[in-house]
Amino acid sequence: MDSSWIGYAALFVAGIVAGTLNVIAGGGSFLTLPILIFLGLPPGIANATNRVAIFVQNVGAVWSFKRFGVLDTRSLLWAAIPATLGAIPGTWLALSISDKAFQRTLALLMVGVTLWTLWSPKIGSGEKSPPRSRYLALGAGFFLVGIYGGFIQAGVGFLLLAATTAAGLDLVRGNAVKVLAVLCFTSVSLGIFIWQGRVDWPLGLCLAGGNLLGGLLGARLTVLAGHRWIRYIVTATILVFAVKLWWSV
Image 1 (cartoon, rainbow, N blue to C red):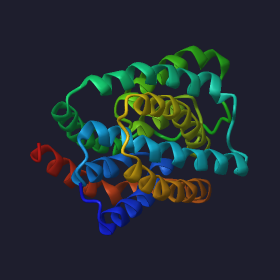
Image 2 (cartoon, rainbow, N blue to C red; image 1 turned 120 degrees about the vertical axis):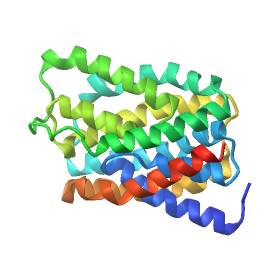
Image 3 (spheres, helix red, strand yellow; image 1 turned 90 degrees about the vertical axis):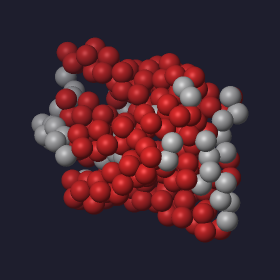
């Protein structure tokens, strides 16, 4: 593993970029997971270690959205709790898959999810919370997204935004619900990974410092500017990482 100061510095900077992307839209882990792997971590350990940064990042993001007054805590019932329940089997799936299969799966998802975001759903109607008649269907959808998030995390923000858009929320309130759901289910996933001894703490904490700064920045940018402008900037970079990751197996 490259533990030089250059490797740690690069990881910290990547964390700032990834934290910003994760809060504004999603996909930041498509940058940090390959970097952790290229620094020498086995893919399964990289997947677990990345959750340290995701957890810290979303603590800061939830605090920021709450401070801006756009976080509806009722979303705990129809979004965060179902997603957290789904993350439990998803995390165990991540623990059972081989490193080679995980790396190939990550490369395919990097391409698929990134291209999908270019045709993402339209912005919701701007409601502050979804009608009660939709709660059951939304809960089922967030449960499925939680399975994905527990398994790989990368790209889950895009899926959560699609779900909040279906709920009728605008991008700002949808992002607030998204970070709350991610914080809740990441807490459970990270706990399982720690229990199984799968976390590299020096790299995880270094990445977490960058993600925290990026999460605070991303929350501010979301409220002030929205997120569409940033998607195309990272698409080419993610696709390059995906090709390199696939052929490095």
